[in-house]
Amino acid sequence: MIPLSWYLILAAGLFSIGLFGVLARRNAVAILLGVELMLNAVNINLVAFWRYGDVTQMAGQVFAIIVFAVAAAEVAVGLALVISVYRRRNTVVAEELDLLKW
Amino acid sequence: MTAEQIIFLIVGAATLIAGFLVVTVRNLVHAALWLVATLFGVAIIYTLLNAGFLAVVQVVVYIGAIAILFIFAVMLTRRQAAETGASVNKNWWAGALMSVLTFAALALLLQSWSGFSKTASAVPSGFDAINQLGDALTSSAGYVLPFEVASVLLLAALVGAVYLAFNKK
Image 1 (cartoon, each protein chain N blue to C red):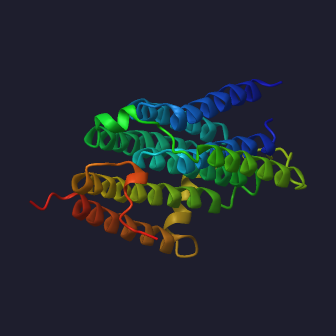
Image 2: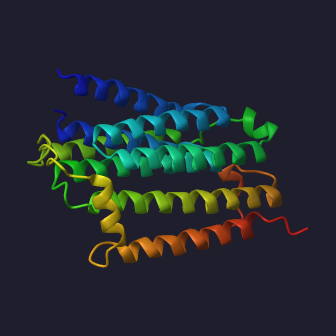
């Protein structure tokens, strides 16, 4: 049998890779790709805890399905924003979108 | 080492390598295709966890819809300058440090937890996960309210995405 620790370490690794993508990439679409990796890592954790806890309690799988729905909504709105920004400013590089000054 | 463990190690390593390529490869179409590979790996992980329905949803929703949406967005926003410039910003080392520290902190925290290396109990005979999941999502004692709220969220996202991406000219 596979111990729970393997799944948790895999999810932690995938989450860290996604975090690096969000923090380091310049292209806004690439940042959204990083967010997808992080959401998938969270889903692995949710399903692993469902399987290794009481399997008759479906909360883990239900949470994972809600995360699917939120991820789909997030990608649709996020990519629509990217396309809208590209039309107005002709760039999708996050550093060049400096309309807000501080 | 059992066959299950060998499958997990192969799939897990492939998933992590594909995920690493998603965030490092320069060409964004390639990055989106590596994302498809990562999502396939996660679907196999779901199957190993006896969550067959979620594996199917992962393939249909994530690979069939979200990854294809990414490829469309990359192709719609392509520009020569964005392709030739650096793919990471000048603070990428701080991002790398942050993600390594996050992984180390998570691993350390998990290792000190008593349930870290427990193994799964066998699924009770006659247990139908899909049936249970459907019951949980539609019964008022279960999760019918979050389920309905999710449908409203998807409708709002649909309207919002159409409004934002609509060309007003």
